[in-house]
Image (tube, rainbow, N blue to C red; front, side):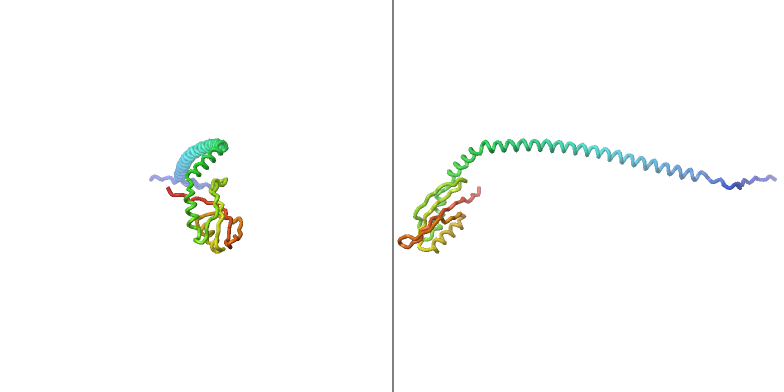
Length: 189
């Protein structure tokens, strides 16, 4: 009979199966390598995107600075042109206004707003400094109500009205000095 020898480890630290631990260590190492690779790849991608974004921001800032410089230069040129040409432009605008303004239109508006019992004794048309037409009128009315009716009709036609004085005539009529400013309505093209 052959006897088989039995291998017993009676030591205080018995031997353990190391293959299982080596497998766990290998799996952990492989996971660590995969996670490190993915983290490195992500870091490189975001770093390249960050560099592109920083380059884009720097380029945009340069364009903004160039645009601001160009705007300042352009504004200076515009302000200089305004200073140099203001008198010429004002002269041309006043000539154009005098040519296109219709005195017949303003006189027709005055006629329509005048009550039947009132009349205009004198009329002095002028252009104000801002090229708006002005009129100084001397209006004769039978009473205060007719004068107020006339003034209300003028206000409805967008006249700016200032009464400069009133007196009673020898016949008992009310004579009023009225100053008007008129802004012509803008026509639709």
